[in-house]
Image (cartoon, rainbow, N blue to C red; front, side, top):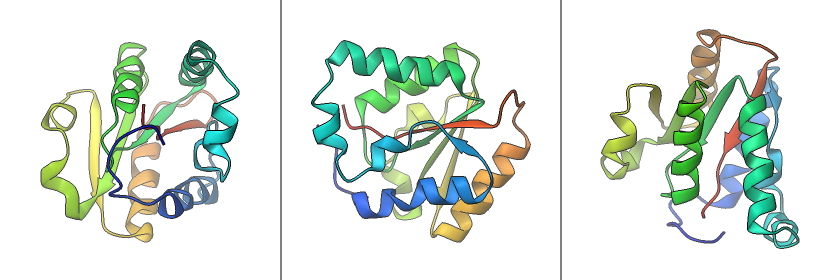
Length: 146
């Protein structure tokens, strides 16, 4: 990854798409947790990455952003989603609660929830998704360190 802290290992992040898909939801951007993520991304220009990711935002009913690791790119994608009127769920590991951006946690159009384990995370995603207006059951999980 290009930046951020290593508060949450890639191996841990790779479990989140499985949780989302186990709930019967369509995940648009699973590529970000693939083993060859950086190699694949290096084949694209920065503009191509931006345009692809912005298109995914436009297709999403809900954006799920794992924000345990700080990221300028994730913050920008959260802002874009809010500006597009797409609901955003920011999730983060409970033990880092006091280190998560107060600006993001205080944003009116963003739901922020801490989780301690995968079962709790599954419950949080399910609860928030049930309250989300739907067009196609597509989820964009944002987790990039740009």
